Image (cartoon, rainbow, N blue to C red; front, side):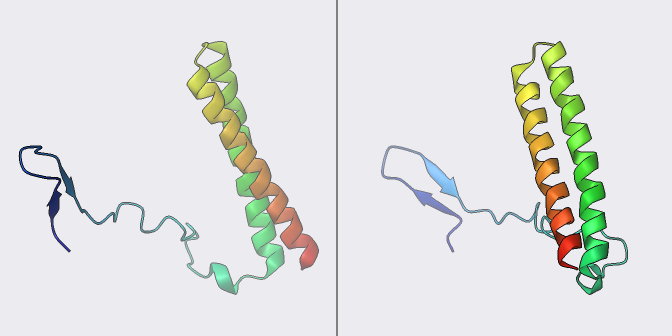
Length: 99
């Protein structure tokens, strides 16, 4: 793959192709034992519930701080994080019910 593509003579705009390796572990769990897939659904459900509840609380605090400081961006980011936590927590509840 070329390092850059020139857009034409005299224009001087180029696009660089750089492989992104910063987030290559993004979908790997941070489980220290590394055996997330070997856990049964009940254990994974509890883990997701706990992590989701923590993320929900963190988002609520971040949103409230953003609201108190009139920082709309932080308020929205906090509420989004709170929603992600609720989704993860409910996903964990579902995993526990299936098990």
